[in-house]
Length: 132
Image (cartoon, rainbow, N blue to C red; front, side, top):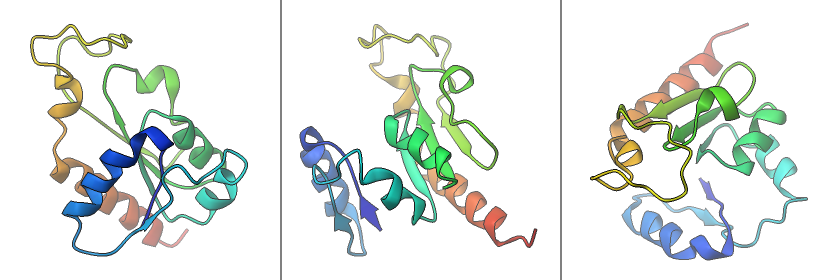
């Protein structure tokens, strides 16, 4: 497993690593935009939010499991076949706001469970194992 993110996301990545049972390579803050396509083209799956790396992975043919909160998967991808989007089922979604005004902040993301993400990742793996 390889973890990527911007320099400002080191604390969040450290928290994720702290909960992991297996070791991971941490490239947080070390992955330049120019390196990202090569790195993601070698990945078997990218689990991400609605982000630039999501679009890069889709462009190089890497399957994506994307978590969408305030944005719309219909409007901003991931484009192409073979990707899975996970969202929280809340009435204010998508709001496209950078500042959450919901009574429960970021409920659209917080209602997505780790089990949902894991199920989507397993489904992606099953799709890749089916002979074409």
